[in-house]
Image (tube, rainbow, N blue to C red; front, side, top):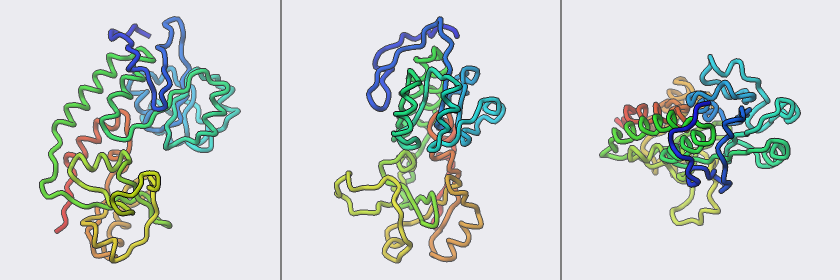
Length: 280
């Protein structure tokens, strides 16, 4: 690995739970395990695929690079013993996607655990720089930051605004709270995500991924429904059928573009800028 041209400032090396990390020694070859699909893609974009020794079965992008990286289960059902045998030096996890008891167990034999938790699109910048500095690829990380900033600056808020209900699952129906990454992405266009409880409720009482039931009361509070292609594989057929049922506009949206942080967020901002929500 080449030496980073940007000094490793301590402020750039603090992860989501406050752990301070150090750059990898230039005499050391890291062995990276990642349990977060979107961050696996980011690591590959940073040129770190050659150092990756483990991923989940959901880490599918970029296909041509991840196909040779061993799978160790899913984001929540990790094959601990298989991962132990791969002897990673660094583990990348996420607060929302990975189970704390599992991460605590893995931390017993993986020296460095980097915890991520971007809750708004702008948090990607710190994450790019954190991983870029740890693994001496800060130049590439700064290139991603610059591309992100350009696409962010091109976003134009919807002058009409929209009240939206973003659906991630059915049977039961599930959505996202306003403090999630997805809702914050939508807010960049001036679209307000539906909230399942009255404004002013204590945040500790809010669920990040609440269930809901269709009702006239709910439909009166929204303008449009968005069906995400992930984690539930909603299709245009689902959108057409639901629109006939609820008599509200329903649009199928690319879940990866709106929910994947990491390098995908750069393209996600362009996708968001071009997304049109018609309520006619």
